[in-house]
Each structure stands twice: as C-alpha cells, then as structure tokens.
Image 1 (spheres, one colour):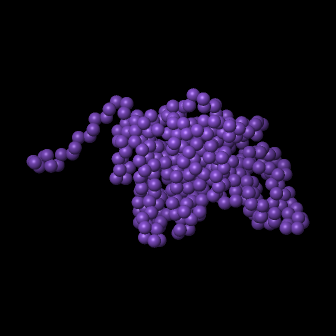
Image 2 (spheres, helix red, strand yellow):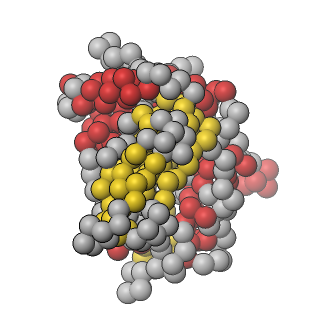
Image 3 (cartoon, helix red, strand yellow):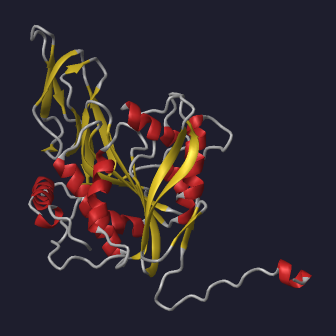
Length: 363
C-alpha cells in the first residue's frame, strides 16, 4: 500500500434522493428506518456499577428534522416517562421522516430514588451546560448537551408540578418567538405560557445552541394522571405531524385554541393550618373571588384566600396542611378571558374521549 493510499479518507456514501443517511450518536450508527437503544456512559453508582443515560433512537427512512423528547430531568416528575412509553408503540421508523431521540429518565439517579435532585443535592435543570470533570450533576448535564441537544433543532421536555402540587397541562416557551409559539399552540395543551428562561436550565442552554424548546408542565410529581399523559402523547404527535415527520391521522380532531399568558402569580397561604380550596386548576377567577380558606386545626380564625387578578388557575396545591407563605394557587393572566373555561373543558373532553389515544396504532 502506498503512502497516498494509506492516508486517503474513505469516500462518503452517496446520498440516495429521498432516503435519509445513517444517524451517528456517541459511537453508534443507526441506519435509516432503524430503532436502537443506546446507553450513554455518565458515571458510576455508589456500588461502583456503571450508570448511563439511556436514549431510544428512531431514525426515519426519509430525511427530516431531528428532535428529542425528554422526561424526568427532575427525577420525581415521571409524567413524561409514561408519555414516552405510550408514544413508542405508535411510531414506526420505517415510515417516519427525520429522527426522534427519546429519553424517559434523564435524571437516572433521582428517578431511582424518587427524588427531584441528584445524590449531590443539585438540581439538574440548573446545572447546564455542565462539565465533563465537574460534579455529578455537571457531568450528566454535559453528556446530555453534547450527545442529545447538539444533534437537534427542537426539544420537548416534560415536567410536572413539585411534590403535593398539580399543574394543569401547559406549554411554556421563550417569549417573542413566533415559530415556537405556533408549535406551542398546535401542541394542544390547555395553556401556553411565555416565560423567561432561567440561567443554567435546559431551555436556556438549548437556546444558546440554536435549539427551540417546548416545555410541557402537567400533572403531579410521583403520580400518573390520564389527562396529563394523553396531553403529552397527543401533543408530541401533533408537533411531529406539523414538522412533516409523520402523517396526521385522518380522524384527528381540530385543536382548540388554548389560553395564552405572559404573566402569572402564586397566591400564598395567609396563615398556617388546614386549607380547603374552592376552585381548581382550569377554573376562571375574577379579582377578589374567594378561591379557598385556611383555618386552624380546630377550625378557628379562618382566613379567606382571594384571587389577586382576573385569570385562570393553572396549578394548585393538593396537600391541605399548609404553613404560612406556602404556594397554594397559581393564576395566569390570560389574553382571551371571556370563554377560557369553555375552551379548557373542550380540550379536556377532547383528550379524554379521543379513541385514537387509546390504541397503539402505528403512525
């Protein structure tokens, strides 16, 4: 073999028109129409056994965008894990365009321990971009950034409320991004909230990499509820259909316009005691309306909780025992207030009665 032969690079395969090229992630290659589960090494557990970030890759036969769907960045927020479980039987890489990376348990350590945090007590969603030689949280964030985010043009990250709270299904997006707002409206959640990005968060670092993010907040930590799971499944399919990755189902129902908001307020307990809420997530409230009452353990000295603004309740506490200052009700100031409850009911009924979400029908 001559010197020129020994140093020559192998010729790149000639792309076939209309067919995707192989997809490379870490040290693995997924062929068009293929589905692979890949373990991305992160660290070791306390027992010395390897700990990995698991990714299911569906790489379509035809070219298209690459997106990721992630869950359990906070380890106790497991709604997205159920969403991904239900999505996978519905998708066929052989008929898809583009690529989807599914990560059902990003914070693998917190997921196993039923904890929001990692063993080092750090919040993974405040640890980006991370570092290959940093803390455990920094190493996991860095692996996720390099091996997942940097491949994609869009991410869908699924969260739920903190322990003892419930979130009405809602999409949160960066402000003033019209194409992202369109995707958020098509997702089909009950509300679209334009909220600022927090430093160190997944949304913040993704924006720096040119990756748009949809963040679904739905349900309660450590619990599954059917409405939240169905909303996530339906929303991901809606987004994929809009991006041309799958064909929209011919019987899919038209998406009801969700509530839109740029401002929200938490109403806090005026005293410690037992709280009884008279309103729930999805209800419209007017400024001054009584939304609940807190009284002492003998029922003494009750204090009313009143709405500070006109808006819609997008989250509420589910634990009656409260301390003074505890967050009780989250109210969003919505742009179309008059018929907001009617639209919320339409979205709820549509999700719970959609037979397409009952079946593992390939799309």
